[in-house]
Length: 243
Image 1 (cartoon, one colour):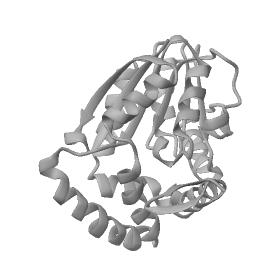
Image 2 (cartoon, helix red, strand yellow; image 1 turned 90 degrees about the vertical axis):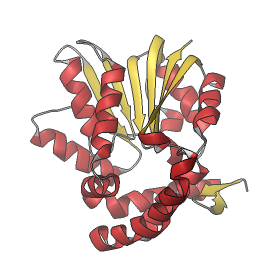
Image 3 (cartoon, one colour; image 1 turned 90 degrees about the horizontal axis):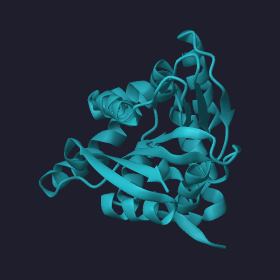
């Protein structure tokens, strides 16, 4: 049985999706407030920057992968307008339900579907823009997922991958202390779950760094990839253009 990483642990590939699903089932109801607390609100600026770089135009078709609680889908929908389409997806039903309810509360009825990014249920060359924010690191076969994202993009279409990355060296010790000491305690206090936030810290360390992810994107359908380091590399936005 082939093994892969679940945080620092080695698990069977078939078991990783179940474990990741358990993490997000556990934190779904507190996901937004925890994002605000653990990033000190910075996640809102990172996402706003991603939406700006996406430059979605009226009438565009946009796929939001790992769309969770729907904040990115909502932002894209404002730019795509009534002539465009934004599809809100996630592999985790509990997260997707939180997002669907949030979007409905905002008066938005977007196509919403549970799907696996490694086997997207969409036609070739269907979307102008694909975005995955804070979701790629949880995927078992990142190469397969990136190839699927390239497949569903139109020629010249844009993929935006917003993800935790490798921080600048002067910040690394403080960042490690915050990740492994503060985050799990915060998760325990607010969400009643320290283990999921310990997994978060571990999964970030196992995720490809900026250069490695750029190379992986270039190997899976993206001719040109730009890297935007945000907050000294705590987060990086990779922008790929389909060949």
